[in-house]
Length: 289
Image 1 (cartoon, rainbow, N blue to C red):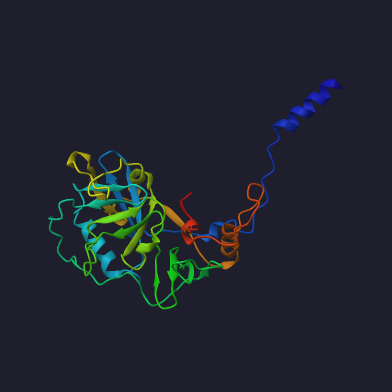
Image 2 (spheres, rainbow, N blue to C red; image 1 turned 120 degrees about the horizontal axis):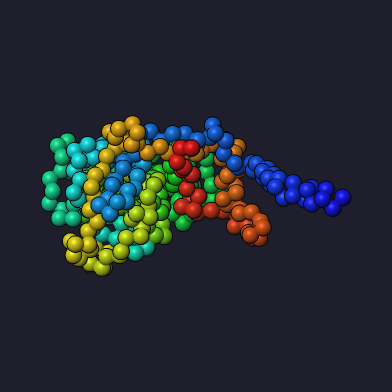
């Protein structure tokens, strides 16, 4: 009898735990969409790290993203560097000398593609914020904000913007930055947002901070972090291309996901917030399983 009880106990211990019941907001396989190869820009750094930028849709920033594709295909970034890392703000890369000629066909000072008329969100948060009356998500997985007259991509962590001089400069796209701190939403509508880092943000956010000019510039060129290459994934051999998917906004499961982001669940959370910052509810992106 004792042996039987021991054997039964062993079987109970060996039995796998039951899988948790699916939540209403859990994504299904059909909710994931592949990021197109020609939307991913792969930067390889001299320290062995890499990061991948997903480029924003051409319907929002057509000239700037066309410039960036031309710059990448000309291999213009090869041999350039990350030359600015400002704590709780940005990491910036490109031509630190500001003297390198741009490739043929690149528009040196594009239109100010900071906003556009249509707020084409297919899902929205329940509340706006101090910077926008409504915030939500495009059909292809981009966060959006609007004031009722214009729409734009908000400056959230990991978003990629075009560095520029004082207006009327709009930046060519040769010098880019990404946000590595608290979302600087005061930059909304003042700079062109052209992408989002979807892999390797820590390759930039963990770099030593610069001190130059009070702007995080590296004062000694020896501090620069070299860029070995920058390539569109569509220009890489098939086997070297990164594979990513974004969760498609829209539908009841995504609506449930928004609600869950706005009202975190017990047992840890005991007081629901009743809302969320769009930058704390960015559309999910994952490596393709």
